[in-house]
Figure 1 (tube, rainbow, N blue to C red):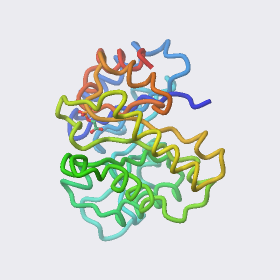
Figure 2 (figure 1 turned 135 degrees about the horizontal axis):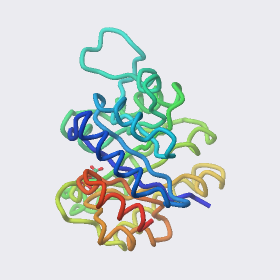
Figure 3 (figure 1 turned 30 degrees about the horizontal axis):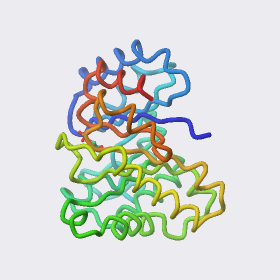
Length: 250
Ligand code: PGA
């Protein structure tokens, strides 16, 4: 039984004061969330404020990106160990904006994911195709290629701790959500890939989230699909009211 996970990716929004405010309001609104896990990815500079605001609530906090190195001459970077030290238990790896805006390669994503796992972080690994790739019938090749490159030869027991997020690039921040059937088709493909490659418990345990213009009005139908185990929410997670509505939809 996969416990649904609803994650908010705040990207480069909400400085410490505003982030703590939204987090505190969220604590008040999702206190009765029952069996759903709730997770926030604030910008790195707001992490300590959010960790403090959600303390004791069961809401988890993660870092949006870490570099492969633990420390050293890496101006502008964050490490998994530092994220842990300020109270993060989770991280994102391979978000489409890291891949497409910051030019992270599959190898960068794989190295970051390993650094996170080694430091004891739980990882949400994002994969997804662009519109030209979808139009060119390359969804399976791109999505499974990204998965294979990031997970590589990680043993099954480590893969089973990773959460996957299918985020079609054309649906992120565009208001154009994949239909529940379109999303389910790719989620089933991912589940099948896990089933082929690893012992059965891996495909049974690994959560696959959907992300890309998830809103309160479409969240329930997306999450009712067999292989959709939660959502990764950008824009609609910036307000406690709409994010709480999505948590309740789970
Ligand atoms: P969106 O972002 O919900 O604003 O489309 C999703 C994401 O980038 O994870």
